Image 1: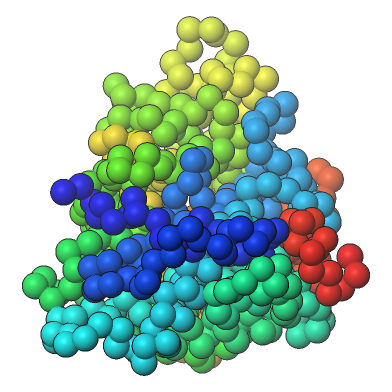
Image 2: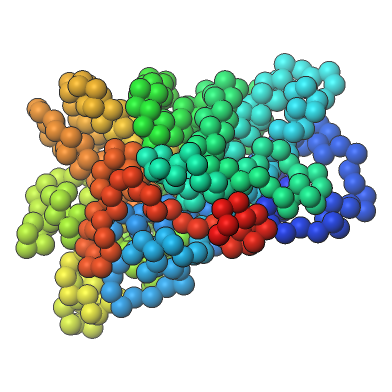
Length: 524
């Protein structure tokens, strides 16, 4: 059986746009089911649905859209001039957050939350034991499914609050009501269309509560013979919940809490930095790299979903074969976003004359996960593996992200969502901030050793910033990393936009107008 076939089986709640207009007929089913889930195997569908709405859609997903938007707003990326694509590239790059754009996935975020709420309501209505005479394995799976629902609800709300709400440092964080609050599934038209709005702080309180429950309920790993077979691949466990808690608390400025969560992830011992960096990105089968804690499954064609959104900021097309390099060369026809010269020089991967440096050549990340193309040389027969041939007006060299579509079949290459390297880098900066420079240096050198670089003997805060950007560029990290540390989000290579300064008061996007038309808490 391919992947987990249950992912094909949407529950009703996954098809509802919670928070948008509904009509009475939706709630009037001709043949309503007596029970939404009649056994533990059917309840497994409730666990699978939130993953589906999070990672799968006809083009991408709200998770992919979030990664793209905030990488494009960050300081390391560059929008190649005179290029075009069917995305709001100028708005993203020039940070015009006062307008409304597509690609935010607002509807799918609330579909995910609605799907989780529906199943969690089912648990509550049945005192957490909805089926008679459960076996020990049934009880283990009931706990695990409930934990997954709490986790995915937290994940969806975390994307929502980063997309559409003021930053924790903003004066509006605790006062401006910006997002629908959905704690239960609506049972009638009035509940569906008259939702209460909440502040960013209220949303974060929900996230922390959901993650606390998820951490208590989820198992550390898949157990054969106990858990449903589908749980083995691409599903959240206790370590993933701790990882998300680390991200949330880091962004909230709770550095002690984030450090404790990072310790739990690293000290679990299940994940290791003992493989080359490419091994996290080259799997188009059920396997995963040793550092990958949680990954989005695209390896099977059951859903027909592909991580297409990333084509806007990666060298290869999603149809790449065997990594899209060498004899299998692949270039996306519409890629627009590469690493800017300011960032390339900041990292020491380009010198002042834009030449590749010896430091870059030694770095396995640069060699395996990025790709330099020299500027167009005017020769129509130039080697596209060396020179820019797609955009003839680009005369300077640029470094492209090359992390995506790197498996045997790019269409079905899985994408890591959480990697151990991030936990080490987060712990490094947190230790540094607490004055533990030896601990910070130890963590940073683990990352450098995996990259094939010499160990540092001393450490500065800037060393950690640079190493993190080398490791996590094009993975949606940089914008919120700088925000968590209260640092300016610079212009990079931009000519027009201003630096985004703390407290980042307007550095979030507007929710769809339809939501404001129906629910207008701020008079906007």
